Length: 158
Image: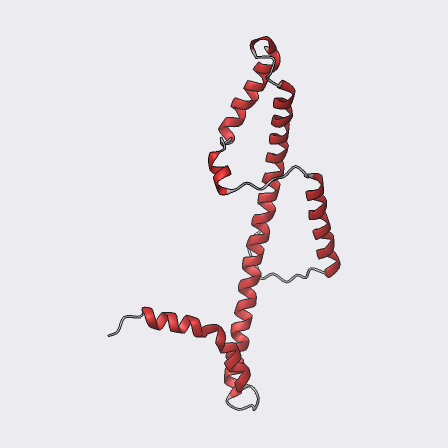
């Protein structure tokens, strides 16, 4: 669907239900971990091309148990593979949802910022004639002070 102005609300009740659903997901995945940067660097990576390799390896291991040492746990290998395939499916769904939330947040944030800039312009114009708005215009203008000072520092002198 092409992007159009978004006009939607999210009720407190719906937001709470979504948070509860996230908590349920985390409860159903109690084995999830957090790796350090160093741990991530050291681990073997399994991409899309490796999935077929692992699947074939599992099939070979299951049909040729006699070639593997007794210490090799085929059942654990199989459980790990099944978990990888299930988590991969979840990851695709989560990435799609994350991208949609991110894109919607970007679009609604842009709409909100644009409206705020319009309000700021109206306040600046009205502050010239209406008492009490000058302080508000200055307060709103604080948002741009850092930007103006940075751009004046980077603008070469002529």
